[in-house]
Length: 147
Picture 1: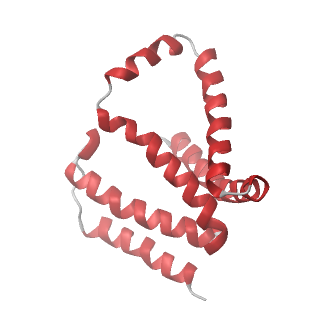
Picture 2: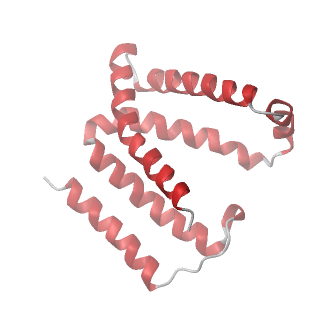
Picture 3: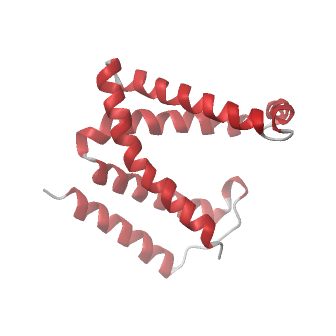
């Protein structure tokens, strides 16, 4: 197990809870969730541009992006959907409920992606343990969204 990768992943996950609040605050200042999402992407694009610019040999490699399959460009679209949805719906339903629903959706999709080896992921068949884990996540959604 790569514990460092797991810890960093958990920290990035924790930052998503913060991002909901940050984007909601920006939305109040700019007047709409989509404008706040645009600000989010502009800042993110600038930061990533600087990281790529400072990375050794990274900038010329961007020219190879044109050779990617058409569907690989969907990552940006899905990222925009996530940021816009978190900005619009996170404050509406609460950070915990939003993230729980997000994780439940991710878990169900990830099980299918792993099972069929979609998008280059190695095949990891669905078994009872994996289904039980996904059901526990979905049960957590119900517990977090109860009133």
